[in-house]
Length: 515
Image (spheres, one colour):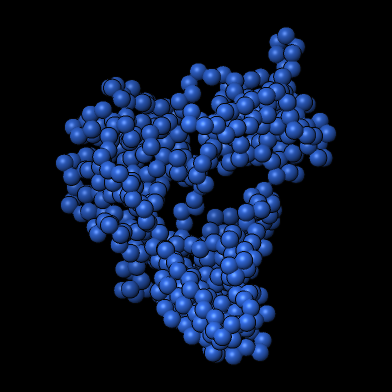
C-alpha cells in the first residue's frame, strides 16, 4: 500500500515462495511489434526496466506474479477475459496499468489472468459542464485569463446570450419551490454530505481531497496539456487539451492569424458536430454565420481580426453520427444478462419468453438468493453469489462473463413479447456512435415507461459540485425519429459490452432497483 500511495503506479506485485524454497516474482517485459497482414507480434521476455525511485528493492516491469495489490477502479475497468478458463499463471497484460514487482513479500499463489486493454479509450458518459483540461484556463470564471491579454484597449461589444452559456457561478443545491413545472420536471435535490455524521465530515473531506489530488497526479498525461499548432497555414489553433461536453459550449483557446500585410484578411471555420458563435463583436470585423456550422470572419485589420478570434465559441449540437452495415445474428452478437434474487418463478418465465423469439441466445444469470436453485437449459450460465450481495454487485458479475459484442440487460421479472425487437436496438448501435440504447417497458397496468432523464454536473465551491437529474431528453436521434438522446434509461437496454465492462456498477448500491 505504501508504494501505491506514494507513486502513480496502478499495480504492485509481490514474490511467491514455492514449497521447494524457490522464490518467483514472474517479472516480464512485454512489447508489441508491428507486423503485416497476418497481424502484429507480441514479445514476452524475462526482465524489468529499471529500479523504482524511492524503493530500491522494487523494479518497474510489465508482468508480475499472481499476488498483487492494485487500484480497484483500474482493475475493474480492464477486467479479466472470461474466455481464458484454464490458465493458472500469466503475465499481467494490462499495458495501461503501471506495475512494479518487489522481492520482499511472500504468500501463496492467487490464480488469475488479466486481459489486455486495447484500442478505444474509455468515454465518460455523463453530461457535465465544459472546461479546459489540466493547465488550460478553468471553466466557470467570469474573468477568463485567456481574454485578459486581448481585452485591454479593444473596442468590442458583448453578446450576452453567448456569454451566459460560458460563465457560470458556483452552483448551489437548492430545491426548487413546489410548482406544476417543477413537478413535471421532477427535480430532486440531495445533500450527499448528510450521509456522514457531523463528527466524520471534516475527516472525510480531508481524505477525499487527498485522494482526489492523488488521482489527478496519477491520471495526468502529456495529452492533457493544451497544445497550439503554430501558424504554418498561417492559422494557429489548438490540437489537443480542449474538452467539449455534449450539448455544451466552450471558448476556443489559441486561435490566431499570423499573416503578412494584405489588403484584407479572411478566416473560415467549419464544424461537423456543432456550431460556432462569438462571445463579443470587435469593431471593423465582419462576422457571417454566427450560430451556424460555418463561420466566416474578415477584416482589413489583422490585429482586430485576431482579437475577434479570441472570442470564438463552439457549441456541440450533434454527437451521434456515422453509419455501418446491417444484417445481424443476434445469438452471435448479443448476450442477455440479468440478476435474480428469490424470484425463480419470474426468472423461469423470463427465460421461457426469451426462448420463444431467441432460442439460441446466451443468458447469463447472477444469483444471490439464500437457497439457490439450479436453472437448467442450453445456452444458460448461472453464477451464484453470497446471499444478499446486492443489485449492482450482481450486475458486475453478470456482465464480466459476457464475451459478445453487445449485452442486453433485463430484470428477472420482465417478459419478452412479439414487440421485443432486439434487432432494432442493434441497428441503432451499429449505425451511431452511441454506447447504450434503452427500450421501453410496459407494466401490467398498460403504463409504458422509458425512464428518460437528463443528468448534469454543475461546478460548485469547496463543498463540492451539484448533480442535477431532471426528466426529459435533448433531441431526436438523427435517422431514428422515434428515438431521443438522453442520459438515463430504464433497466432494459442494449449496450456495447466493452464500454459497460470498463465503467461497471458501484457494488455499494445493493438495493437500488432502477438507476
